Image (cartoon, rainbow over all chains, first blue to last red; front, side):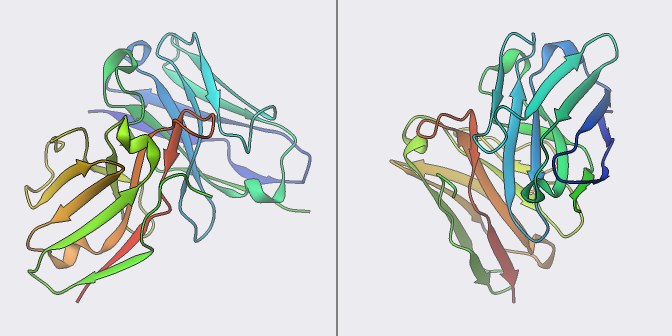
Length: 123
Length: 109
């Protein structure tokens, strides 16, 4: 069965860095685009970043562009999010999500999500 | 702020029908997908595309789209349907790849 599991969250000071990982199994990882989506405490879902199935393109929300970097290691079936220049407003649960269709046919539909990892930015 | 607009809260009597809407210019080009999220849980895809429901989602969940508005309809709402519901689509306005609506909290009375 498809499984996604995030790790790497924690408490970090403003301006600091953190790398999130999303380990996957149960599907052919290299065929699927992957998203990071976050949710601040008590708030709604916010799309953060997307990487195409072949890693050829990466996309970012305006709020994280230039500070976060998405990447993937198909040999490890793992997605990453390198976060730097962290701000208080980056505090959230970060989810990784798999696109519904292989080869990014549509891109925005996500059929499997991890349980999330909590990032707290605090001084 | 979201480029997809949802009403913050909706309520429905047990067994009745409720429609949750999502408005945005990107919906003229892309179908919305809909996610259910219960407290402490990850989002769950409940409807997507023109007329598709993931395996295991009850058929009381349906979707439709017209112009810049997408709708998720729950016909015969159950107590377990009480949750937050989010729409999303590809983005065509804010130079982002994907955008989410602000979410609608559904209360089943």
